Image (cartoon, rainbow, N blue to C red):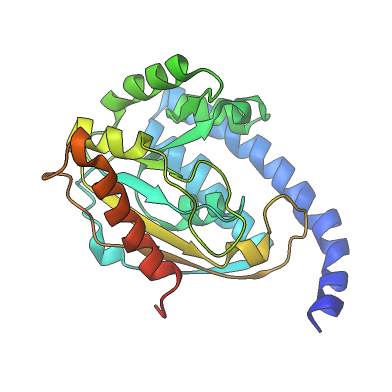
Length: 245
């Protein structure tokens, strides 16, 4: 039955959704850039990011269930870490987490029409992974933006993960949390790998979950025991990834 429904969905995907994605990305990206310049980066992030993401979820369609909103203090800034299963994680996080944040994203995304300019003007952080010195400089420059309830979000696995387990975490997110003395907010996404599996165009409607865990304090951690912090966060995320929540 799923195979039959998948075949029925293909004309809609190519004739409706893909054009909508391209046009909406261009329009909302340009709108976000203009709002960031002339009004407010926070408003630009909501209009050009959250609204864009929700509309793309509706048009796909995917249905997102959010758990754990009570774990968020809107006045507190966090270093948010999330697992990464699919390109649709971006829509789920941006559309439904309900927190003003800055992305840490690979530099190649800066070249996408609309998306690149919008993200730059909003203040998202582009990382050149081929040049570690430039990457570190970009993160240092972003620190002044992570205040007054604005957070920063990382995919600590570094890339989309194929399979049922979290990949090895990189230290960047945890180092920033320690340097800024900010709590880490673990976020777990479930279901997006079935909506758009990694490295494919096999898009299919479905349901996803966004589970916001309890913040983890960095107060008792430092560079010498950063790996303990990383393991604690990873265990918190894995408990939601494989649990019954």
